Length: 423
Image: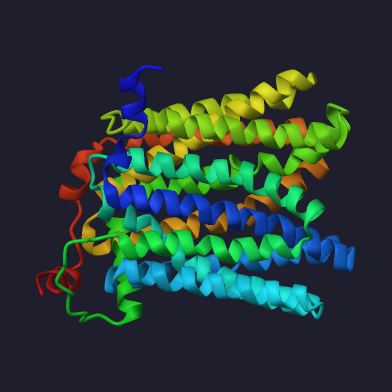
């Protein structure tokens, strides 16, 4: 394999801080996906209720709608490294409590609901802080590569974690998934403690939390580039990212391939996403980020449109892989542009708004896709989704004239924030 290809694809790993964090996160996320898989099995095994299975998942995601912006405020006000250490320790303790409840055979469904709710709160704080932390450990030049490698790692964990969980549950018992997840947090905590960052003077906070949140939203509204990208993210989040919820129906009613065929569709989508992330990682600090946003949406939309017409299983596998590829190209390019364009003093709040959209559009999109597929059938639902995403990308491309590099010059930080930044 070409050495230059490897170097460009993994360029951000030359930063020792990022390398430590990347390795630690990889181990921890594999553990997390083991627990997610085992917990879903445990809930259904205990209750036999699909409703409770969905409720636990919803409670894990719901806090994102209310607390992600607050997490962004914390990222701007306090040490991101210390916040991440706190969230990882908290998550480790929750996993430990779950393991103790299971091994002592006293676990009840209300325990799981409570733990899922607390876990959702922690994640809502953690995500915007984590996203705004990357630029601190790699800088702007390798930011796109770092974000892409992180996406690659997440998709690898989604493949490896559930597979390991299946083996461990069958051979050793479900409790070991929770025990191993608890232990896995040690890897990311060790990495965080090892990370060395230059001392940054703590700013005097002259705004209340409400004012801080308001100034973050004003910053986004006044920054044409970031505002338009986030609007596009809302549209793609609702119409473009929820096709996966229809995979069980496609496998059973369209392709007639059963459970294994369904699993293969999910895997193909994940493999496509992995290659999309690696493609962005290889491009590194490409000056054509805006073009990559459009490329990703067009590939995603075309794949969904063709999937609406597809009746052949092997072609369906190719199309869902392409959809995963396009989705990750779009997602990583968008995230990189936003991170590269935002002022450091409001980075956390902007990523909090990003997290709100990222987490908040998923349930809306799932409801839309499920309801639409019920009443107008899958082909029409997918076709509408593809058309809406394509038109949104075209319209915003026409109106969005400023280049990414000009964004920070165009945007005025609210006056109170400027004063805070001087202190």
